[in-house]
Image (cartoon, rainbow, N blue to C red; front, side, top):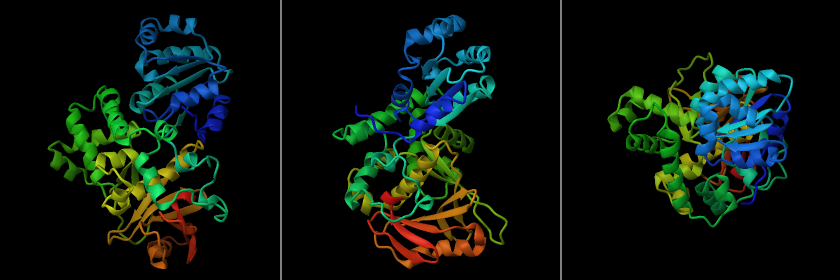
Length: 404
């Protein structure tokens, strides 16, 4: 399978030069193993703890296992042998001045976070690799976000139909590299593998059928305020169960929980979050959307585009090794800005519009936000699925998603 250059690659190399161990986590099939082997294939021994014999050796005699396979060492799917963590700490502490001793990877962030906090705190840097961003798929992995560069001179990269086809495909590297794959079959297999491999082993989940119904309920509420009491009532489960399931989806990198931005202003602001699946292909698949016409013209068009914009900003920041600080703004009267990017220099407001014909009315909520928050709000952006870049006045510019 052809390798698609990842934004995180130089970050991963640099981090391994600074820390004794690096943990790379992210959803299943996001390209963790491929990236690790590309970066460390010549310098580190590679072992997968997914293999029963390797896992058995690591579990039965951890010290003997690490003596047999000394660093520099890559341990893939490290959550399969959680008891190995204290012995990794012991090995690191014997060579604390050395860097890049262990490269660890896995997809179950709940178990990994617990073990790293207990055993490897201060010794390990944690990086996350998500499915491909649009800029990575376009071969623009190093392209700064629009508010970090001159907006002129960058072509959108996708036609109107091509963009919707790309959102239906999603960002998993296998689908981008092998474009003749049948999307429905691939995504169906992915969801089933996720349920059977990542979810079944977690103590928060008992009934996989109900859990999959919970995922479907979140898909139906993409871009809406999430009322977990309502979801729980529809599924016939306790609210605490829904909260636990949401934490599972968030910790296994399947959803992004977008929380409202709060400041001390004289307005009532909502406190309820929104939830987006992190991959638009999975989102469309679970919603039963199969064609670009269904995506662009159906009821999922706006939420799907919104998920794509938020996901693109999230990946662009995350794959640079930064912690994304993303929010939305909504008053009790319904005035809303889809995305606020909280930077040291201020807030970047982003609105998402399904229409490919920009107009000044699309910027009115950004103007209202600026009235409330004043100088904290920087230039605003209205992102749409077309190919037009157009100033809308008052420091707001409309631009295509492919230029974001």
